[in-house]
Image (tube, rainbow, N blue to C red; front, side, top):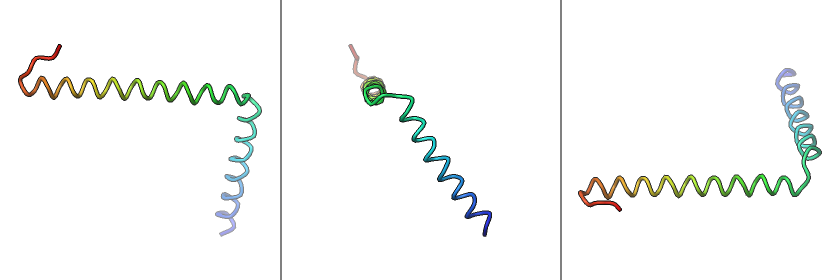
Length: 66
């Protein structure tokens, strides 16, 4: 039981220290830029996948895709 409690406390301290270290390494603007870039990359990837899947569906129906 003591081991579990110790592990939980250690994990919590590690998590808190990691959050503070991350905050100190980056300015707020840098963090926003990282999130925006990730959102753009994700949207581009999703759009590409949807286009490829749509093309495959149309081609499987026998129609020509331009």
